[in-house]
Image 1 (cartoon, helix red, strand yellow):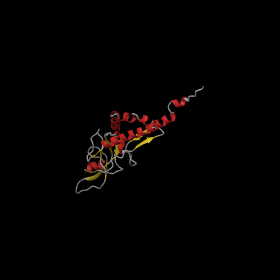
Image 2: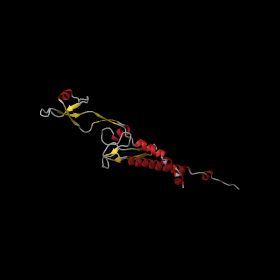
Image 3: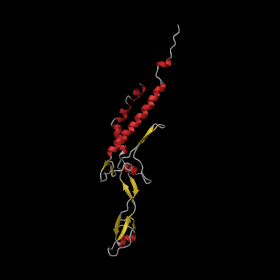
Length: 186
């Protein structure tokens, strides 16, 4: 009497296991990215005044698209990685990038100031800031009107990196992976 035993059937089904691992990986990474996005949105507060340096930035608009709270996430299946963060809006330097890391940017709005005759001749304010004359001299009022040129320095107001660290320390990363592959194999 000959007994034939198919050894492959006694062990796990490799394609089924790999499919369960891939599905769990996609589901869990997407879930983690969404947790980071939700926590980042919660740190951004709508208020009139700017936030202090080192704190999360304030949101000054109610627009649904052009706001810091517009934070998409993307999972790339080809590299098994994800990206989460606010959108760059416009062609200028990215506002979210400047807020996160600090930096300089061109002054967006014109700021008019009044100059004396000497300051207008020099093309600088009394503190040495360069200016561009906007109007001719007003002899009745004895001043020139000028526009301040230059760049504005922004202190860092990080909100994405602290959010990521908070999610790691909170244990959510490990919690999303717990028993996730077992569910997919059943």
